[in-house]
Amino acid sequence: MDLGKKRASDFFAKIKRYFKDISQIRSTPHAIAIGFAIGTFLAIFPIPGPNILVALLVPVVYKKVNRISLFGALLFWNPLIVVPLNALGYSIGNGIFGYAPPVEYEISFLNKVYYYSRRLYMGNAILAISFAVLGYIVVRLISNHYQLKVIVDKVSKK
Image (cartoon, rainbow, N blue to C red):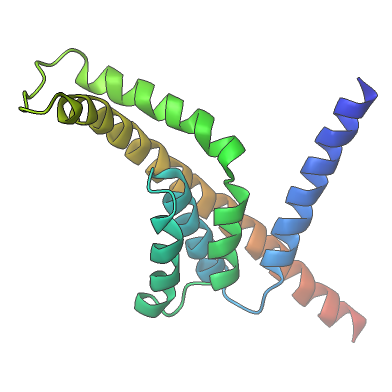
């Protein structure tokens, strides 16, 4: 039991250190938070592999995004966390679509792909947007807090 508590406390200490390191980057809280939100969306939406390629293109299109928080979010949402979210996303999509007569294709494999993928993508889109918005808010608040704390510490030392 003590080993489990130690692992949990180590895990939360790593998360706290991660957010502290990111928030102390010389960037605006918005740029840090939007990088984390975009990284969260790309990690949760079910496009494994290409999500890294898309993440590489995001800073080209959106110059102000913080690259460290973007790729940090991709690392934070690792497969151990995302796989259960995929199951939850499928359940949400199944709740939205319910029973609908499937589109019939000549190839039975395409019938199954269509049936399962639309539920998965709809549910995961809802989850990805929800977690991205929540992640933006949390990371923005943490970044504001730590950057304000750094400023206050610098002023008080003078």
